[in-house]
Image 1: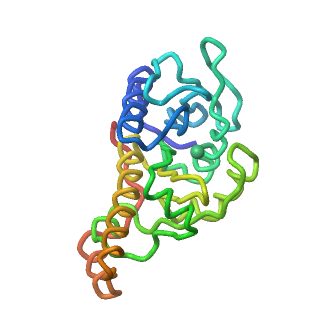
Image 2 (image 1 turned 90 degrees about the vertical axis):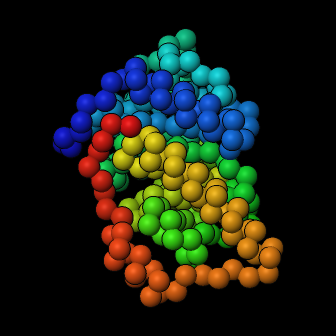
Image 3 (image 1 turned 90 degrees about the horizontal axis):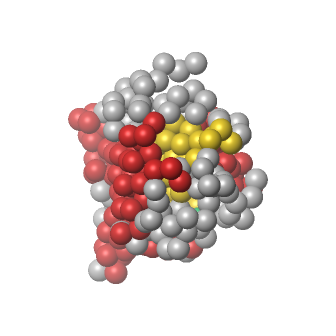
Length: 226
Ligand SMILES: [Zn+2]
């Protein structure tokens, strides 16, 4: 049992809706793409429903599932996202994580389509904030293979590129998960710009060590309210 600080369920439903709108406004999702979840406590997870635009959700649309994926609460016949099992795989393997955001931000997803990861360090804030973003090989979205494919990468990362698919980011709060997702997209855009300009100057080992010394390695944070 993890001693999670208590988060108000309806407050969290509203925050999920705010994040959904932001993903939609940023053009990180099209149509009904993307999914968001928040771990309320040991066994209750709020999750966006399937077949709903993340830009037009209502608090009651959000469904509640258990850690094993059992539907606990839903209104109007809503069902959890088929990619929800990917979120559950993250929660099962990382008790420090309480929010997961998945979207298809176009530049970072372009890297995943080009079969390129974002692991080499070139921006200090990325080194300090999220660390490297590996590329998880493609599996069919919504299938059992997707959550299984993530397992080897979950423990040591906060952001993952999904081959030919998109990005998943997570953190101790919903805000952290969203910021981590935004960081991956910005990182990809900046890489692409530098690459187009003809040269990507990576940070060297000494520079990385100095950053880690000054700002500390990323450790699981105590969990503040969002
Ligand atoms: Zn997706």
